[in-house]
Length: 115
Image (cartoon, rainbow, N blue to C red; front, side, top):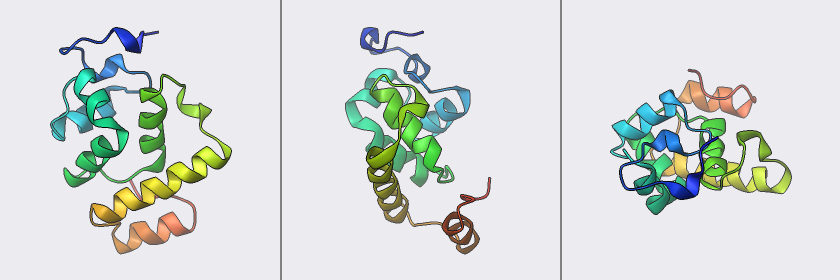
């Protein structure tokens, strides 16, 4: 396991817990190339940048990023914290232009946006 506190200015974003190749690629497309940069701007700014660069909204992707920046496993999110994060996620998606009509319907019925 990687110690998130030891990241230097050139550490890859994958040095942060929960960030794998797919999310690293999305972060890179958004101009976020280092763990240091990601920690500096935080999860909300990073996820907003990812959405504006074409990443499809996915709640689990958002909260795994939040959990990773806190050094927590992705599945540690539950209860009221998960509700708060869902509200924040919905706000970020709306600020980035929202979901397409079909994605909004899928999200409302609980299947999430199409991939």
